[in-house]
Amino acid sequence: MFLIGSLSSCVASTAAACACTVCTCASREAMVRSARLAWSFLFTLSMILAWILRDFAKPLLMKIPWIVKSFNKGSMPSDEWFGAQAVYRISLGNLLLFGSLALVMMGVKRTSDRRDTQLHHGSWLIKAALWTVCILLPFLLPPSVINAYSWVARFGSPLFLLTQMVIVVDVTQAWNDAWVEAGDEDETWLYGLLAATLGALGGCVALAALCFHFFAPASQDCSLNLTLISLTLVLVVVMALTSFHPAVEAGSLFPAAAVGLYVSYMGYSALQSEPRDYACNGLGARLGAASGATLAGGMLLTLLSVVYSAFRAGSNTQTFAGAWAGGNGAGAEPLLAGDAELTSAGLDGVAPAAPRGMDRGGAGEGAALPARAQEEDAPVPYCYAQFYAVFALASMYIAMLMTGWGATGQPKDAVDVGWTSVWVKIVTQWVAAALYCWTLLAPSLFPDRVFG
Image (tube, rainbow, N blue to C red; front, side, top):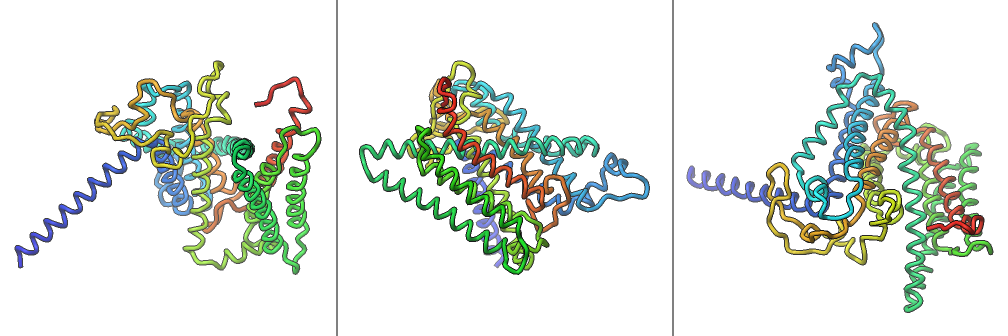
């Protein structure tokens, strides 16, 4: 019996060791092949950590002398104050990390650049340690510095939303142009474009119906919500009419419908951010009665959507190419093509290839170089500096979501709730519609200028 038990223990230990080795090798290969996924994972960990500390940071921060000394005698800040302090500190750490990397990676255009192989894709043990240091470093700062940073984040966060808006407008127009061009040879693409247009318009109507149902109950005087919902529909109609105006040369219904869907979603999200105890927020009342697992799932979905938005915005190589590529315009061409982006290797814009064992440098880890790095002097698949800059902006935006834009402390069962969040999204909605109309009208208003 003893022998059987020993053998079973040995087999179990060996299996566990093999599983650990496989997971380690797989994760290492994934990080080497797609630095974007690895950084997105670390950013997600940061958000989850900030979310936990927002609700349970007080016992930890009370043990930090330079934070406790900032209290006036006899006064003790609320639990929400401690939570906001923890969120701001983690946000600041991410901002320092991603902002520094954005500056360092400016000008990287070829895979032969050592910053690509050794800093962006390699040295993950060192970068993990650097990430940990950046997360902990802000906890050494006094509250006065963190309070100052909270104001910086208030003004920096809208830049993340602006980045999203510009990319939505640019991508929808590029999508429309590509399918129209393909439709010259195969009408199936035009039918697909028509279906996508009808789907987007149907989504606008569906979101408007949901808004009227949940945020404008007949039993309450909800004139504000009714006005905001109606204004959203007006914006969708105005964008559609503008695209057909005789002065617009490149107007099309699909971009208007797609941007209209984004505008409608922002309107729905704004109303959803109204305080839970607001009489016209029928959805908030239902969420207040929901289970803890449902609430946690909804908050996690909100945070992951921000990660995905930052991932896509930071990987868009065409919209902001001129801003990062320098005066010679090198690297302005799209570097991701075809279906490669949908594959695992396409996560960094390269085709699959058999890995070749060699050290990528840093931390003594022997990693296999993907095919993109095997080419001596190939273009980088996306703008690294832009990727890090977008994540730096997302770091500030997450802090605002978790703290209600600094207006009041968020309740433990909510993220992105409060009147400040409502009006930020409403203004974002208006700016997005104005930006789309401007892209249509600007070429006619200024015929001597070239608009890319």
